[in-house]
Image: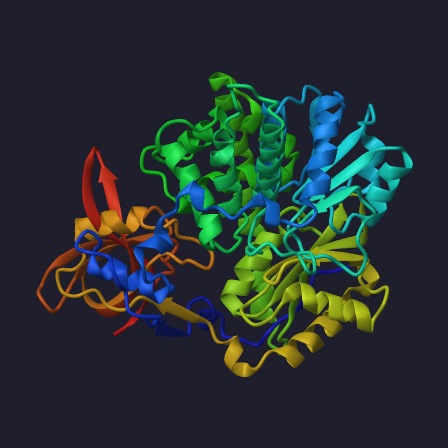
Length: 585
């Protein structure tokens, strides 16, 4: 089948940048901050609904109780039985960063709690498919007595049935939305099950398994199982932080507590050998690491293994305590990530060519397919095109290299369009069209027959048209307003760096100001280095903008949206503007 696309009719240049800037409004009046918190930071907090210091006191003591998670008692009972009975326990993970870190948390944590026969398996997406599949269960040799899934399982009806038929007990820990049928498991812990009373629905898969371990430790503590030396599960928080940030789950208060604790551990030099090595090969500073470093530098190196090869490389990196071995794994993962980037760049260029050539189409729900595409990278292609077009996008590739009959799709959505619910609606309207699907509001995965692709593209566009109004198809870039003249200070930049953790649903502060472009030059082949002048007081500002050189000089007078960051150069700190968007003033 040739390359196919159903694409919106949008001018390519217009689609590459936000259509409209909108400033965040305060959600109340900040109180009780005193003089230690910069007034600008107080305003930033207020725009995110944080009005009092207590709302950013990210102490572990303020974590939600594990006992409020549904299914916890049954899961704890079975795990303690397995630990005391010296059962063989297999952790069935997932092939993304959340799954890899969750697998490492489960293996390390259960060993800390006394389990001696713990192993793991991560499916190869090209061989076993997603999650606890029948193919994965059949591949397990020898068969374990207990399987504990991490970051998957809620949709594994057939795989769980296969395991149970072999006499294997199964605990599912997951955070994905359930389908119409749940697997027949011994216990399931998932805050997103219908009726679950856990106050936060934003836990990543690594967070769910960490909570289960906390509950097991609490029960064993009540039973006086540890004596004077209790296992320190806080040693796992660096892994929890990495998986939570990389999975792009909302950083609500509970998740911010987990991420902040993990970042603190990393900055103190107490991360596991694998995370430390990954930070070093990514050329980031352990001492000043931020959540964005986990999301943009460390996480992609782990994800690349699952996308391009085998996530076992990533899990082994996170499990080893040998510094030299961790470094070798990290370098291998970095090389795989470089290959992923090259593959992604090629596929995105091909997708953009489809966009440029699809002037006949006015689709709202966008679908893309090319038989040469790599199934491990289509999610990144969908994400890039979603940003450019500001439409929900699904990219497809052959499910395996030697069989183009089955397609695997990866979907990314925009605000106001729940992508998993959209797939469920298509499945209800046209039974059998989609073979399998699952996911979240903003991201999902599915599979279908190659011959059904045109019919699916039509159905997806139809659902998107029904759900989205024209005003929802305009990209909006939210900012925290202008900084006053002289406001871009090192003091403010330092406070912003450590004030988060910033991330999904708790976004990094962005400011917008008018500037004069005093000078500019191209760095490398794609980046811009600029000297900007504030016309209010004549102050000069060093600025950079990545992937911004498209052959046209920046405007002489411009409005810039930027992050206020610290440039660490040879031990000296200076303020820099990291530009996210520029337009003529």
